[in-house]
Amino acid sequence: MRSSNPVFSRRGFSRDNGYAGFNAQPQAGGAAVGTQGNPYAQPQGGNPYAQNPYAQNPYGQPDLQHGAPPQAPVTTGRMTMDDVVMRTGTTLGILIVTAALAWALLPVDDANINRSYGIAIGAGLIGMVLALVQSFKRKASPALIVSYAAFEGVFLGVVSSVVDNRIADGAAMQAVLGTMGVFVSVLIAYKAGWIRVNRRFVGFVMAAALGFIMLMAVNLLFSVFGGGDGLGFRSGPLGILMGVIGILLGAAFLAMDFKQVEDGIAYGAPREEAWLAAFGLTLTLVWIYMEFLRIISILNSSD
Image 1 (tube, helix red, strand yellow):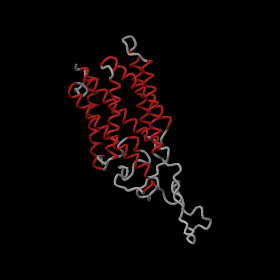
Image 2: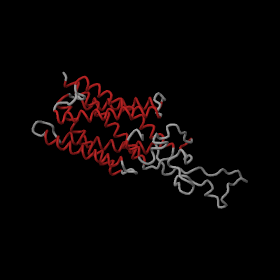
Image 3: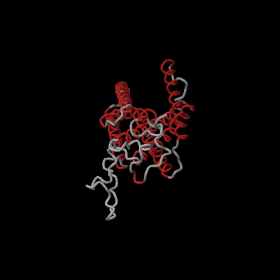
Image 4: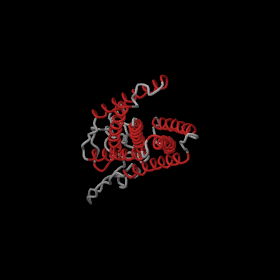
């Protein structure tokens, strides 16, 4: 089993048999550690992140006579928290802008709803394909990630407009606030140590997520060929329960994403890996937002 998030199962974020070093101890200050525990450390001479502490000494030995310590490893080019915040802000900003434009330019009244639905479905499919392509790439592609955010924003903008204008006034803002609340709560719980991301936690969450996705896929097939809501997993009390489970799974994914980012910084991941971190966080936040929007829609449809 690999990472909590498909994008983190690429180079750099999966180690210790795919569990991102949950039981490993990085060195203080984020310096690279040995080749056994650090995916970024390579044998001597092949690691661009490890510097020779005697490189600046023309004699190739430490200046023991004057007590000068060897140079510390250079950290230039490594991922920092600022990099992750900036890249995540970029992807979310693009997603929000395109969602707002889709909301404004693609009306969902009776005369235009079919056209708006068609554009939204097309954008959603393109976004899904771009996300899958990036997930299976070994390196981050900023162009793919930014394009995914743009197309996903169009899809979310139309879907949010439909729910907000036709089912529940203010639903989009409620879903945004709910998503922000989950993000902040999980971040506080993770930093306080209330959530321990270890092998058992990862295994349980991944098994639960796999079962959840399979149930949703079966429900979708029944709804396509049998009509209605299929097995009823997306309507009524059962739909609300599944939505709550989806939000809890999203919260668990957030905690695992935080762990992945923390490990990447501690082990000296290259700076471009910040794009993968931003991509993974964006995917998780979109998941949580959609589950909140679905619950709000079900609650107001039953009135």
